[in-house]
Image (cartoon, rainbow, N blue to C red; front, side, top):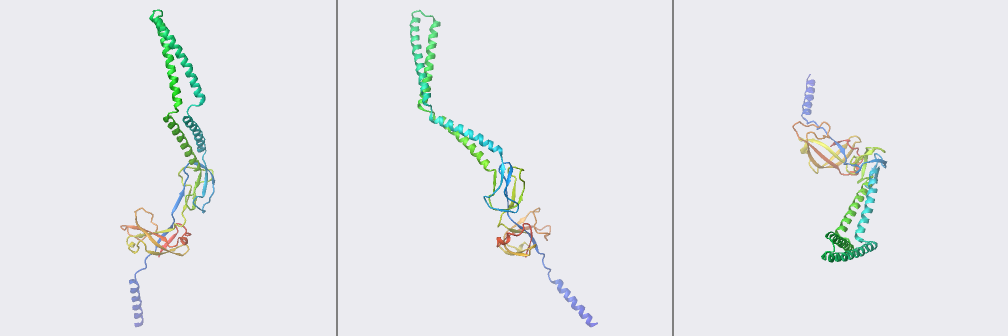
Amino acid sequence: MNTLLKTLSLATAFTVVACKEPASEKPIDGKAKKETVSFAPKVTGRILEIYVEEGQTVKAGDTLAKLDIPEVSAKISQATGAVKSAKAQAQMAKNGATADQLRQLKAKQKGLQEQYQYAQKSFSRAKNMYRDSLLSPQNYDEYFAKYQGAKAQLDAVNAELNDVEKGTRFEKIEMAQGQQNQAMGALQEANVAYSERYIIATNDMEIETISLNKGELATAGYPLFSGYIPQTSYFRFTIPESKIANYQKGMPVKMMVNYNKKEIAGKIVSIKQLTRYADITTAFPDYQPEEAVYEIKVVPENQTLADNILVNSNVTLK
């Protein structure tokens, strides 16, 4: 009986001691992440060729796809014709009148000068006859009108010839040059749009998703290729306010990748508060409703080792 009582007393004592020991804390789970990037066409066109596949790693400058944009080809033809016309106009303004145009104007000037001299002599005779009452006022007015008309025509051709001999006005040359620059700008714009028929990778990327297939219409700005930037792996963990004091920026930590049991060393690079409706990465985080929730971002010490970890896989913070 005494032996039984002693055994029960020892069992009770061990039970009390075990109850007093603090229970181990629940591990904190998070997610593996990578920086994302997407490539979209600048112009709308139908996909002619796709040169890459999902899962492929591309380098900056690689051609991903080719589009068919016939509207831009038509604009290039229009702009090319406008440039040729504007160049001709600008050149004509700089060169001024040709030798044939000068000869024509001088011949015209000579003919009008003879007409003016004849009208002047006729009007002089008519004036004497009118003074001697040998000519009616009506006839006198007719001679005077012919004289004034011949003088006006001669003055006009003299001014035209003088303008041509001095050369084209500076303002006309500037106007023609401006029209040429405008046409060249339209052609350049069309050529730039035409060059956008090729979708070029602007940086390295691991292609995760190709949104469209060959033959489909790709609209401007629609993400056609999406994926991850290599060597940008990081880890996100959600920490309640009651436990955030255990973590500090710059603090080294170790993590365990759950699906392959691989241990990764890293460093906390940022701690920020999450809003109520933020994406909580830790599964079933242990926090009270009134507590604030924080996210810590951890970057691996060795990006090469972490680069092969699957995106959004579970990681445990040790």
